[in-house]
Amino acid sequence: MQPYSNHYSRPKFQQYQQQFVDYLRDPKNDLSLSDSLPEASKVYAELLSSTIEDCLRTCFPVCREILGSVIWQQLVGLFIKNHSCQSPLYREIPNEFMAYLINEKPMIELPEFMLDLAHYEWIELILETEEANEHENSFPILVKPLTMIPVLNPVLHLLHYRYPVQSISASNEEWKNWQARKEPYEQKAIILAGYRDKHYKVKFVELNSITARLIEILQKQTRNQEHVLLQLADEINYSDPKKFMIFGMDILQQLAEQQIITGAINEP
Amino acid sequence: MSNKKITGSGLGLRREHMSTLMADTPKIIDFFEIAPENFMGLGGKKGADFRWFSERYPIVAHGLSLSLGGEDPLDEAFLLRIKAFMREHNIELYTEHLSYCSHNGHLYDLLPIPFTEEAVHHVAARIKRTQDILEMPIAIENASYYAAAPISEMDELSFINAVINEADCGLHLDVNNIYVNSVNHHYDPEQFLVGLPGEKIVYGHVAGHHQKSPSLIIDSHGHDVIDPVWDLLAKAYQQFGLFPTLLERDFNIPPLSVLVKEVEQIAKLQNDWQVQQFKKTA
Image 1 (tube, each protein chain N blue to C red):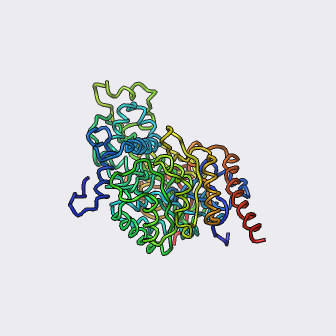
Image 2 (image 1 turned 180 degrees about the vertical axis):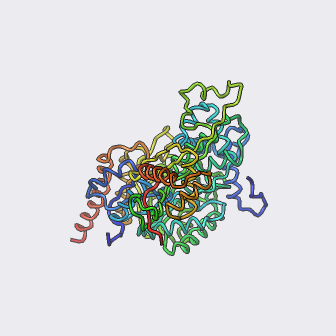
Image 3 (image 1 turned 60 degrees about the vertical axis):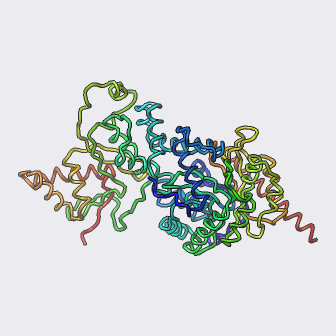
């Protein structure tokens, strides 16, 4: 992460800024506060650390509690030192942190469920703040005719996790004592629908694989309900399509009640 | 609102007070200010609530992340997003800090530019480019700083004047920052104030700060405004005439009524000045 060379023609103020920022990113390295930096540089190192830590602590409270304050602080320190944040938006610092965890693999021991848990905490912020592109011609509720096309909630993410992220908490010894644990945690795939309801509340609903597949089909294409349900019946080799239609309409109805489906439009 | 001109006294818009303000906005508040970074591309409740304000009140965009003094290339894609955001909400004034906040990536803090000749040219060129892209003049705020760079070739006042002169931009005058710097770097705040290019002032800030030790003040925007800072604001009006002025409060947010008293104090100082002018000409 050093694209700047200290070429002699580089302005002096930029060489100084480089030195200053290098120190802010890694203030524990005593050598970096050299003679050429003022004592008050320490104030900036503290401000930088607390700005980033405050933001991350707000977004990832369970991760922080499970890691404990020592490892958490080390992780935040590594993030500041090694990651180059591309977003100019303060509220996207957690996006940068996720990118760091996933792509740069911090050199520190973390529990194997950390990525799933962090993602689950992060997506809540995304669901809360994401812009919704409402479908203009959508009827407000799902109406019965099979010839209508269901419209999904514009703020909806299908989430696949390997660990039961909703039940991981620091008050549970099983998760809290990850460091002392001998055997790995058991993986158990779960699928959640994360979405924002019309009162701006973020909700998570656990889905079975058939319902999740139905939502996936709706995400990929705009076909009427009958078409979508027939495709699903075919995919899962359901023998009696007529019976499946009744079952499928129940699922669609339930998704509408949950506000995962928010409306319907007529076929063009 | 058809007339979006910024005049009088304003308040920094914080989520904490949005619903109270939407129920009943005190008359003394003529306009609001936001950081565009906090509201651009924002959906959900907060995004919808912000639209309520931008449809009713003039808004000032006070930027945080442009990094005018930084070495990373000026983020022109980001500037285009700011431009679109300002159009969308009918915002006509954009100001930024005379500082930098990125170097090999964003650091989300305002860092002090060394006061050198080369830095003047660098910053002025970036301000000009910003004005070209936004197709409007911008104003830069005199920033607070704690660590004076030993390589500086001039004092802060000369630096600010040189940048504004070369970039031909406006000055966003922050009287609290003058006070903070005057204590941290041992100079006379009034003398500093009168040395600024008054004809370039388009907008002002007043705020509280945190006295960490007798010789170090942190510009936290987390306390009430202190009297010497109010005096400095009155002095600024006396010296340069009126400019729209905003109360900033970003931490330790008290009830709205406490902040409204401070906004009233801004309006009172502005009114005092007008009365004084009237008497002079009468």
